[in-house]
Length: 194
Image 1 (tube, helix red, strand yellow):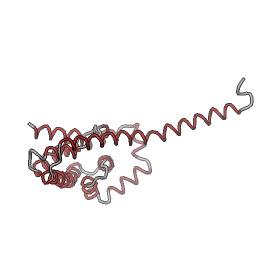
Image 2 (cartoon, rainbow, N blue to C red):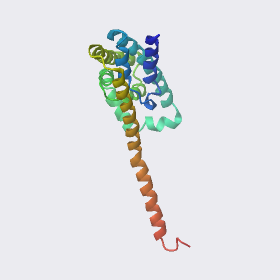
Image 3 (cartoon, one colour):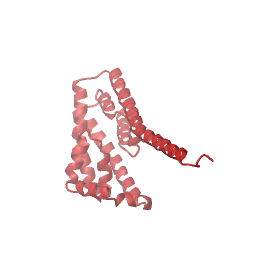
Image 4 (cartoon, rainbow, N blue to C red):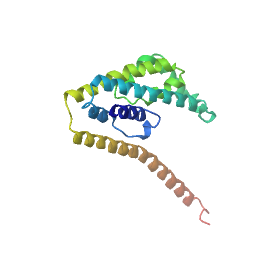
């Protein structure tokens, strides 16, 4: 039953809602390493994450076909990014999925570049399995107390919320400054106060 929950969690945190879920999957993996062998967790986690990536691929492909998003897809930076990705799509995906680099870019570029889904999922699995195996293996070799895992997960979640908040702050400040400049200009125009 715990392994089924781990599978569902792997699929959920790597699925379409992943940008909105500030989760620490690695901490969950370290917790489960107490109950199951590292290779089994890596295998189940890879299958769950790959299933989620197949859903992500189909959703991005569907969204990219919408007329309202066509302009974004055909823009200069999107075309350049897709062309760069398609120079080595398989190994780029493996490297990004294996590394701590956020994988949102390959999730979007693969369907935009019409990179075949089976090859994309193979690259995802090839990058995800060793990453999960290393993390689960380190959890087996060095058991981390549950309280420390919970604390670390909480810190990661809070840091994610703070980071998002800080990213939005410059936009609000710029909007506020622009509104103040417009107000100042209107106040200075002769006859504007009548």
